Image 1 (cartoon, rainbow, N blue to C red):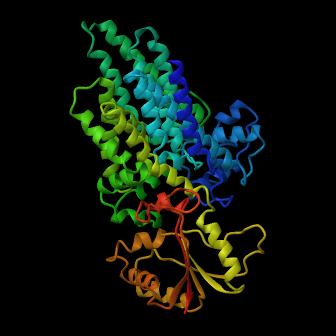
Image 2 (cartoon, helix red, strand yellow):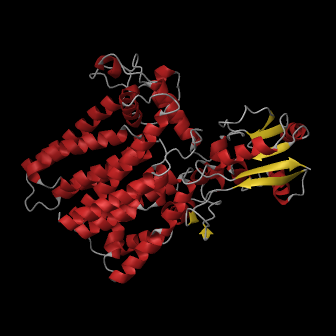
Image 3 (cartoon, one colour):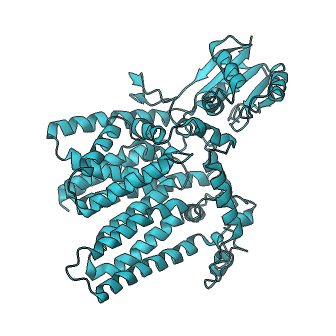
Length: 547
């Protein structure tokens, strides 16, 4: 690596760090991300085991979520264990601080992915491609957003990309056993971040298959060596997974590999939410989502943004119809395989597609490297507009905090207000404001329309002075299904156009705007993006007053 390359790589990592670390306390300590809130509750309840045997024994471990009254747990435990350990070191393990430790680690692991992409691009092509691939990924918005959340996604992504890098080194016969062990370690860590890492197994299998075909003379000994290498990989992966997620197993005895029935039950329950038969409130949004089209639109427009989204697709097709190295074939296979599989599922959340973003970045270098230098610079500059605009979300208080301040100042104490079930209510507790003295009525909007449902809602609305819509969770889902929610749709339509009993008196938005500070020249209206993309860190809040 040349001195110039080192400097450019350092600048790319610094740019990536700026995007990921700016505004980590984006919700001002309010814990407004529901998944993160749950993980924070689990981590803050954990305790360091007295011994290694206690840690490995799922029946007694104080780090086992099932022993902490969390009977439903389907996440990987490695990110939680790491967060708790770091929190112990810096004395930040309580509910009000440990999530910031988790967010920092989430961002740090994504920075690691940026570096790994340089190494992959360097190995597959050259240093220029490595730098370009690392830069492209560093400015993709979905990784930037997910780096601000204490969740498992960026941890998983890091270990999958690391596994791919190690896989590229497996053909080196001199270090094959060492690389195989490292590959098993990396993949085991990925599994302990999220069980969906199993989707990467075909890529590893194809990588090993490649070792057979180039052999000029296939012998029994060579095949045996490759087979043994695969067995070592599986064995190391299993051991690492067991060490990092002992709660999946019934005992701490390494001779007993029986799976915990509670874990199996949790996975089955999770699968039940991912079917068209599910009307669990958070799943309602997926009934109107079109397979393939919905995730593709969200990835191109919002997860990557323009022009990167278009460039990524063009680069994929460009690589698909050209004779390429086997490593490029593996990247293409992973992108298409995961996207098609996830894209036809009932639930097609944007974060499920994060593992293909790094590979899109690598493939983009194949196409971009063919462009004129001036045109390439123009693309880079225009590609920066959207991620820079996205920073405006983290440079301003979250809308729910701003709305809460407005509520304290403008709504009389004793007023009756609403909150929609399955969404966060307002006002939030804020410093320098007395505790809220409001009466609340809950509205269950996800129930199918019926005479009983609307009798209850109308009885509540008769008592209400103000309606609070703290995000588009309910109306964004139900209004897209008028056949199931005709009266609910009419209710929201009347509310929004002012023809009902209430009129809008306040609205609070936070959108990606350019420039992110000062007077904005323009903003990206992402109201129609997937629910989770806006609800967690920049929901639209609307307040309506009875006429």
